[in-house]
Length: 526
Image: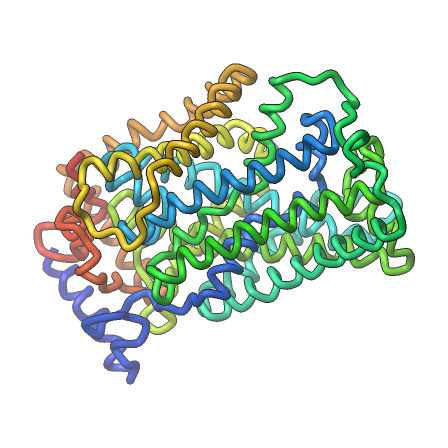
C-alpha cells in the first residue's frame, strides 16, 4: 500500500502546487473540504424546493379522493403539515447533535449501528433516489414537450431523451459549483412559489366574486362517498407523502453556514410556508372546480388555468416544468451528499467520498447519482418500484425519530444546541405508527416486497462491509479502480473537522491510502 500512500500524499499537495489557497473550501487545517456556502435563503430553497414538486400542480386529488369531502381534505392537509413540522423539529435536534451530512442515514448508523444505517443507505441507493429523480425528470420532459404534441402524447423515446438531457445538465451544474447549484435551486423555488402565489391570488379573487360554494361548512363537509376510517387513513398517508423532502436539508448539514442557527431557522420558515401554500392552493382549486371536476382532471393546475387565465393559461404547464426542473436539481444535490456520507463511513466505495481539489464538490458521488438515475430511465418498472419502497422510506422516518429518544437515554449529557420536548417525538411516532400499521394492513404484499428489497442489503453488508479480510487481489483491484477514478475526476479525500467526529467515526474516516488500511473497510463497531 506504500504506492497508494505516495499517490494520496502527492494528490493532497496539488492545490498548493497549482496556486490554490489550501484553505479554500475547508474549515480548519488548510486541507480540501466541503465549502460552507449554503446560507439561510438557500437552506429554505432546498426544503421548499424538494417538498413542492409537481404534485400540487398535477395531482393533489389523492388526498381529496380518499378524504371524501373538501372540508376533510383541508383538515388532512393542515394536520399532516403540523405533523411534518413536528418531525422536522426532531430532525433539527438530531442535525445539530450529530452535525454530519447524510441525514437520517448518519443518525440511524450512529445510534443503532452499522447494519441499520447501511440498510437505510442501501434502499436509497438501490431504488428510492434513482426512481424519484427519474420520475421527476420525466414529468419535466412531458410538460416541456406537451405544446409540441397538442393532440397526442409525446413519443416515449423523446420523453426519456429530454429527461436524460435534464439530468446531465443539472449534474454538470452541481459538479461545477455548490454556489451555482444553490442559485439554481433558489431561482426555481422562487418560480414555483410565484406560480402557486398566482393560483392563490386567483382563488382569493374567486372568493371575492362569491365563488365559495364548496368552502361553506355545510357543503365543504358533504361527503361524496361513504365515510371510511381506512380511506381517511389513506388520505393522511397521501398527505404525508406530499410533504416528502422535508428532511433533505439534514443531508447537507456540513455545507450549511452556521448550522446550529440556520438549520432550525430554515425548518421554522419552510414547513409553515409549504403548509400555507398547500392549504390555500387547494382552497383556490375548489373555487373554480367542483370536487368531481378536480378528481377527473389529470393536471389540476392546468385545468384551473384554462378556466381562469384565458390566453395566459400557458403559465401553468410552464410552471409545472420549472417546478420539476428545480426538483431534479434539489434531489441531485442532496442525494449525492447522502452517497458521499455513506462512502465516507465505509458503506460505499471510497471514491464516492472524495471531492474535487478546486471546486470542492463531490463529483464522483454526483456522477454515481446521475448514472443510477439514467439506468432507471431505461427501465419500465420504476413506478412499481416506487410503490414498493415508499413504505420503507416512511418506515425509516419513524426509526430516526425513535433514535432521538434512544440517544436521550444513551447519552443524556451530550451537547444539544437544540433540545425539543420529548412530547414532540412521541406525537410523531404515534401518528407514524398509525399510518404504518394501516399500510401493512391495507397493502401487505406491497409492504412485504418493500421489506424484502431492503433485506437484500443484509448479505451485501456482511460481504462488502463487515468482512474485512478480503482477498488481496480484490483489494488491489479496488485500489487500482479508486486511483483511476481519482485521476479521472481530480478528486481527493476531504479533510474532516475533528471536533465534530466521534472516536469511532475518526477510525472509519481514516484515509483509504494509508499503510495497513484497505479501500472499502468499514471500521464500524456494531
